[in-house]
Image 1 (cartoon, one colour):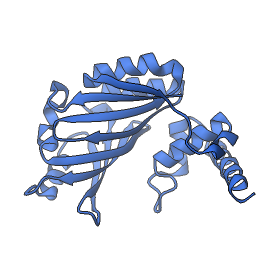
Image 2 (cartoon, one colour):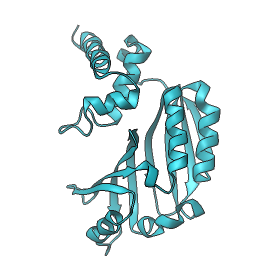
Image 3 (tube, helix red, strand yellow):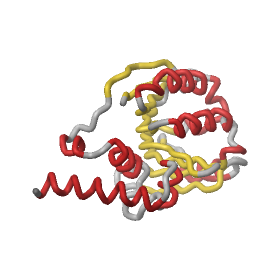
Length: 219
């Protein structure tokens, strides 16, 4: 697998409709976003600029025609955790989002993380090697982005080498989408939809992966 790092300027015309949001943010980190049915779910940690009223931003987001739900959770460090759920058919970038969804159906592809500063943003995408050309083409077209780097992606911990490709893929997507969080950010059924598998198959992959990891750790 490969990890691709994309760079794009926040001043790009692609983000013209969201300049009010970008201008309110001092810093942002998005763990991942994923699609369930015709909805796209995004989770990110934000730091608002001084004198910005977060509630005003939330009210404006709730008035967007494609936003179904938005929540802002204050954190101890002064940052906020932002959860948004939007309907793809009503989203201004719906066509591009469905293009990405089609790529996800053909192989492993996950938006690993993203970072945003006042001037620029970086997006990290992990995918199977055969999807790299199409992923680069799609992200360049959608975000007017440039490729900052491409590197091999392998699990850092040796214990993951014991897992099959399906077990590793299931475990990684489950972790990145918040399945192991407390409370869970995603249900088993929703996770199964993302992976294109039955809930029972996903549960079995996770059970076997967890057992192999525990065997390596405990012996």
